[in-house]
Length: 183
Image (cartoon, rainbow, N blue to C red; front, side, top):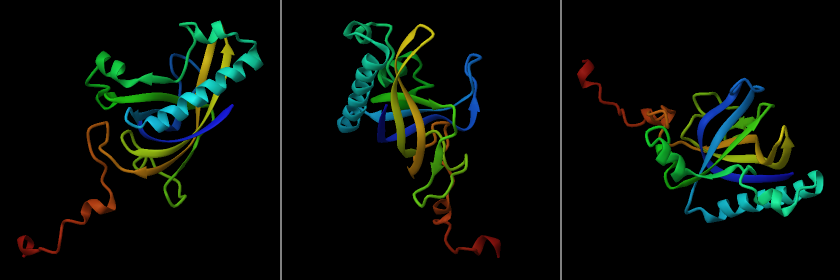
C-alpha cells in the first residue's frame, strides 16, 4: 500500500455521509480532478499505481499478463473521455485526468488551520490537499488497483461545479459603507 499526497479539485463530493452505490456497502467518496498540465502530480499517481501493481504481484501472485489485461482496473482516468460521454455533467473534467477514491471510514476533513469543515465549505469545485492510499485488490473475480481517500485539507475555493460560487466572509467585502439608499 502506497500513501499518496496530491493537490486536486474535488468533484462529486460525498465525504460527509457514506452512500451506497448499486446496493454495495456504503462508502465515502470523491472524484479528484488533476489538470493534464500538472505532469508532476500525474506522474506521482502513476508511480503509486505501479507500486501497487508490484505489491499485487507479491501479495496475490499476479503476473505481468494480469496487470496488462484490459479488465485490470486502475483509479486514474482521462477526463476528456468522460467529458465526451456527457459534456454538461462532466464539463470540469475536460483537460484533466481524474481519480475516484472512496473509503468505508469517514476521512479527515479540515481547513488550512486544522479546523473541521462543514458541507458548505467542502463542496464539488473547491481544491484540496488530499491524502490517499493506493493499493491492489483481488476480490470477487475483479483485479486492479484502487484509491482510498483518507483525508482532505481544503486550500482554495473555486466555482461550485453545481453551478454557484460559494458565499464566504470575503463575499461581503465589496458592499462598502454606502447607506444613502436606506436614508
